Amino acid sequence: MNCVRLRRALGAAALAAGTLAAAATAAVAGEVPNALIVLEADPATPGSDPAAAPPRFALLKDGQVFVGGTSRLDAGRLEKGEAQALRRGADAVRKAAGKAAALSLGGDERHVVRLRLPEDEPREITITGDPAAAPPALQAAAAFLRQLLAFDHPGLAPYVPAGYALAAREGRLAGGCRSWRFPFAIADALAAPRLVAATDAEGWPTGGWPASVCAGDKRYVVTLRPLLPGEQP
Image (tube, rainbow, N blue to C red; front, side, top):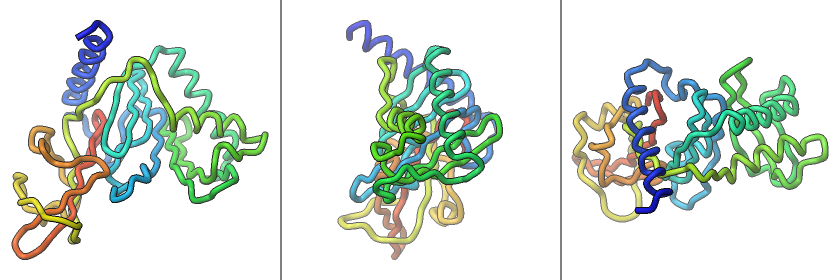
């Protein structure tokens, strides 16, 4: 293993340890504690469940950054200046949206993302359209959105969460099905998402990829959404 890979592996291990420590901190379900910027976007992968996919991008107050796809998450840590530059980009979106909860960039309105800015007058802004079609007045906001959607950084490394939010609903997927083997009844997961340790999720599809489960005479669609540090199901 070369020095770069070793540094990335050690960084990922440290972030996973931080997740375990943060899991003891109470948090509101569905919120990412200490988040500055969270971007959620449909991965648009055929057969995937967007509701269970990890966020496309998340920046925490301590500089931790997470970049997600359909199921995979990479994590790293930004320098102070890098994080500040992203916060300035978020301010450009705030300015462009004004007091509104939605912002249209023009072009194909089927492109929809949700930007959450929990700090300093918390906002949640639904952004539609194509950043490439943005008019001059929205260029700064569009450039920021393009940056988040294609975010990359040399410090990113694969991230293994300490836990997942397991959700279930009655339904059928093509193909066979798995047996239920989690330490609680599937009825509990039908009522509300349940916290599942990473060790219990081994071998299961995660994020936006659903699993088909047989329990009794019924079939279910089960998803395991990866949780960020301190996040609750």
